[in-house]
Image 1 (cartoon, helix red, strand yellow):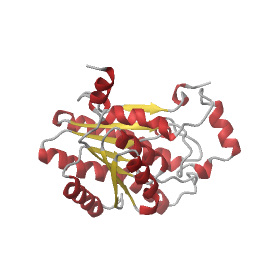
Image 2 (cartoon, rainbow, N blue to C red):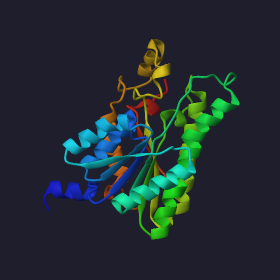
Image 3 (cartoon, helix red, strand yellow):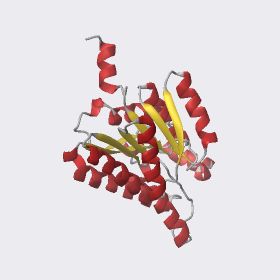
Image 4 (cartoon, one colour):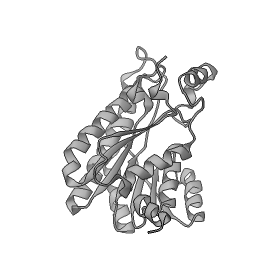
Length: 262
């Protein structure tokens, strides 16, 4: 077998359908493009079709297939309708990426109940709702599925200035391991993809000059990540390369940040 065919069989996603919640954002949007270039039909999920248009155009230009579905990541009825629309249009679902997220720089002593609950609802509860709805779909049809939850380096090591975000993402990491344990014997894999520092909508509010210097001092690669550098890890977790045995794990893409102490 030619090596190119071997790699296609291992990492390719032809005849797979991937639902990317948060696909209108910078990181998950780039991950969606990677999934499509590997052969998957990609459903970009968000609240704004305008934000999805560039991603869809790039996918179609590369010969891939993608379309947009509007959905609210925190609303169970909206997520159920999302699933129904995708099954009706595409006939199946194989991969779910949970990437919707919000951040806040509000310190612990100042954050209000409403703000804290909003962050938890989007980052944690919304992730759980989507996992439940799509796992029920996989289980009811007795088909394998791959769920990738977007974590954060701040979920592994609490970071200053993002108190509530760190707490919510740490909970996502724990949630992912619990769901992986519950569903492993039913061929549903659940993993966490953990970006380090990638300039994105959620963190621009706290990336002032002093913050950037602190991050660079703690990052052996001495730079921010590029969204394209998440594609390889995404394909590993989504594809046959993971077999049925990579589940409940955290794939960290952070330029060495998590390996650094002093």
